[in-house]
Image (cartoon, rainbow, N blue to C red; front, side, top):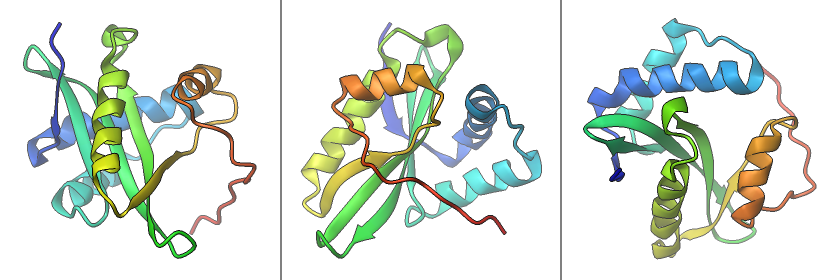
Length: 150
């Protein structure tokens, strides 16, 4: 199987929204509101300041995705890239799809002098994801994430 990584296009919006919905159910047991996720994906695809999606294709089908959002660090005078929305279709897992997506994004980040590193957050109980990220040399930071939802 040949995997092609490319920038997501607006025409990928419905697939990305579907993958995000599957991801949320799979990792957090939460159903996303279709009235929010579709327009949310479309907003990001239309405005790269919000972030970027890349997709993995095989045989003309989108089989995986990865998203990056940005955080400015005044301490480092540079940008952190946050990995989010990582999803690989179930029938293509364990086939190197995530690795191809990650290597592509990491290469872009390393080639950009303004990027100081890559961060991500992962559900506490998602041991499979922890294992994958550990192999890529991601380390727990010691920070606890908190939020206030409006």
